[in-house]
Amino acid sequence: MTLLTLDWHFEIAEKLELAPIYEPVLDDFLLLFLYLDGRTPFYGEETLHLCFFLYPYVSVKASPSVFLPFSQEIEDAILRLRAKDLVEEGKDFRGGRYVSMLKLSDIGVSEARKVFSTFANSWVLLNGFVLRRGSEVLSELEALKKTYNGKSPLELLRVMALKIDSEGEVIIKRLGFSSERQGKMIIDMAKQLARELKILMRENPY
Image (cartoon, rainbow, N blue to C red; front, side, top):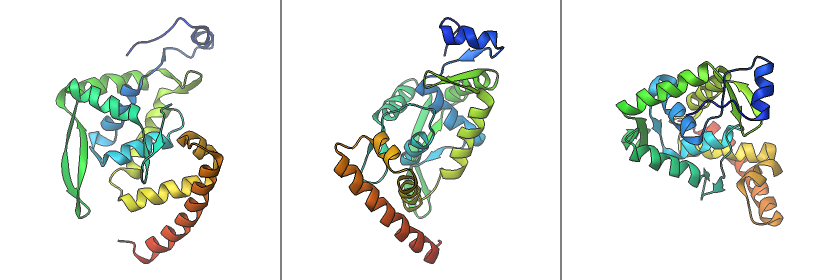
């Protein structure tokens, strides 16, 4: 975690009184996601991958797993933080099933608090060119966590289907399918899936 002041865009931002400026790394975002919303654990690692995918200001390479996006970069970040004893993994029984659980350790809470404080008091450089108030980024990350954490796989699948249905080619490019034909097939499937899941969840809300 380092405050940066050397590059030209940082110098311009400082002249505009947009300082201090901080350029976070992926590990920072992971710590923040786990720290926000009262340090509630993430229930289901798939939810964490989806939240990162839905947030446009964190650049991670995602690929489609069988159902939802998966990022090896996020998986590697989890392993790094676990190796430093900053995060802990376990299982919890929720919604009639055992789900993976990811939470901060006591040491992780202390480290995440530092990252939170830096964000809250800085302008944050995202994706190398977007400057945002850190406090706004924190609010957006917390909203994502509150919205999707603990949702069932069916609910998350519907979120992804609706996202592909509404944004089409943009999402397909982010998922990196191998051909235009494959991308079109996925879009068509997502449109149909979104319709069917909407009906299914209306008929079976619980």
